[in-house]
Structures are given as C-alpha cells and as structure tokens.
Image (cartoon, rainbow, N blue to C red; front, side, top):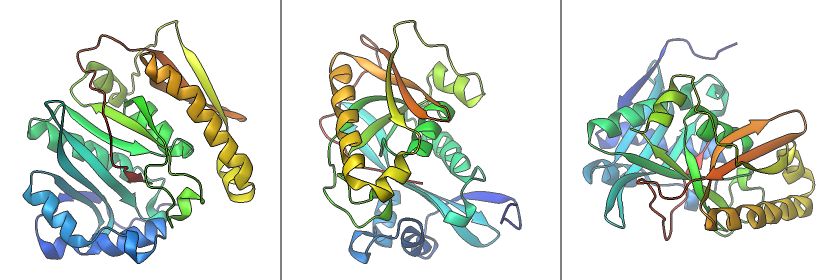
Length: 264
C-alpha cells in the first residue's frame, strides 16, 4: 500500500530554505557519514550556474530530489546529474521516474540534448530503470571512482560505476518513454550477473568483489571496441547487460572522467 497521502508533486527549487531538507534526506537514503553528505549550499550553487534542483513532495514533505550541474566535455554542453534520491519508504511508487521525467523536460526547456550520470552496475534495479525504462545507453566503465565510501549501498566494495548517457531528444529515448523500446541488432553480446548479487554483497564480500572484477573485465574490452549497453534483462537466476555495436554515431562523445551519481 502506498505511503503517500496526496499526489506527488515535483517543484523546481530556487531558494536556500527550500534546499536545506536535501541535506538530511541524503543521510536517510544512503546512511553515509556526515563528511560524505553534499551540503545544501552546493545545491544553491547548482541553480546559480545553470544546473537543476528538482524535488518531489508528498504534501509539504520533501520525499526525493534530483541535483544536476551544467558540464562541458570536448565542446559538448550537457547536464551531469550528480544525485537522485527518494526516501526508502517512498521507493517503488514511481517517484524516481517522475523526477527523471521532470529533469528531462527541464533540460529540454533549457536547450540540452544530453544528461549523463553514473551508477553502480551491481545495483540491478538502477540498471533496469536507467536502461529499460529511460532508454539510457552505456559506453564507459569507471573503476573505483570514489575509492572506499561509508555508504551502505557500496557494501565495502570498490566504487565501480557505469556511465549512463541519456540522449533526451533521441527517437530511441522517446520510444522507450512511450513504452515502445527499440529493437536491437542481431549482433548482441550478453554479460551476466547473478540476480542475487545484492545478497552476495551482504554475505560474501570476497565473492562479490570477484564478480565485480569479472564484470569489469567483460565490459571494458567491449566498450573499447565500440559496443554499447542498449538493453537489460532479468530472469529468476540472472541479470544480463546486452550490448550491440554503436560506432560512427553522431552522438558519440567519449569522456575522459566523470563524477559519480548516487541513485536509489
């Protein structure tokens, strides 16, 4: 049963007071130490330099937010989506999707074509959401972006991340958002993970670390050879990243480095 009392509303935040609840909400979502929580004044800076702070509300209570900064790489202007958070008791009710849809519309209104963020490839729910429900593609693997963190979700593992590219004007994204995911090519490569990877992270860290290493070794050569993750599947036993050739695309823009987005 939904915990919401009223329809969720999304608002663009513009004032210091509006952004202060984002600080405590982070700790409730990730359980990170105080030193790793983004202070509210960084949210203020984001809005002043052309970024985004959008928040989800249940009545007057903030239950989630998205934070993004303007970025520039190789002459291309885009948005780096640094953080998306939804309170644990509100997860599973489509609020993350509402926030990302609002982020996309806001970005379109301001002339952006691309929103990027990074996510943990072992967080299968995030992978499925980003790829299957938003239409993002992935062409880059970043090993241990943050080193060790206190976040409970990192489970003491290296903070490996995949880079999600969300080409928000692209036809494949529009089709995906309309519930009509595009058909892939026949030349597909498959990379599997156990469906129970989060349980393995919790109870067998060494096995989890080895599975993480194997995933990196499988994906990095494919990315190097112009493959991209364009689909994601799950069954009772496995989760599968599906890759297809993705070279000679006008939207190709390899990145030298990225900061990681925390997503839930």
